Image (cartoon, rainbow, N blue to C red; front, side, top):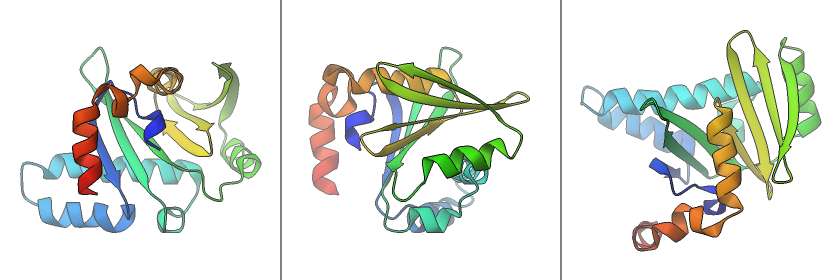
Amino acid sequence: MWDVVPAKSSLIIELENPYKQLNEILSKTENTSFSRISNTFLNDFNSLFEFLGIEPQEFLQGNRVILSYLNTSNKKLIPVFISFKKNIDENYLISSVLNKGYELDERKLDNEVILEFKKDNESHIITYINNILIYSTSSFTLEDVIKSSKDSNQLFKNSNRKLFNQVNQSI
């Protein structure tokens, strides 16, 4: 999954057992200055699974997740959810989301299909790269992930090799 994490990531959280670890983070950071951030992580997860119509525990069981936060020009951190596709049926997903009243805009960037679902002022953008599901609510951040995945110098693991090796060894 690290083959799609952009070097521009401001904050990266890798979870081996996402559901359990997120709940641990929440309980350990309750009533601390970090609690607002950890609640943001949980809200980001919940909004994704609510949109997809998938039970979080079912999808996350035995699946690794990387949450990569990219800083936008207006100094806002936008999450990008990266995980193995697992058993998500793309056609079922599209049909399910369209039945919720979303419109689908499908396009390609660097030969990768981008599925952008829109409803009112809400956007959900998904792509798959090498059986990896990548999701964001910002097309800009998702496009940045795609561009980074095509240029190894733009990947976190290559542009921050020393830090990546330290983190990778501790896992």
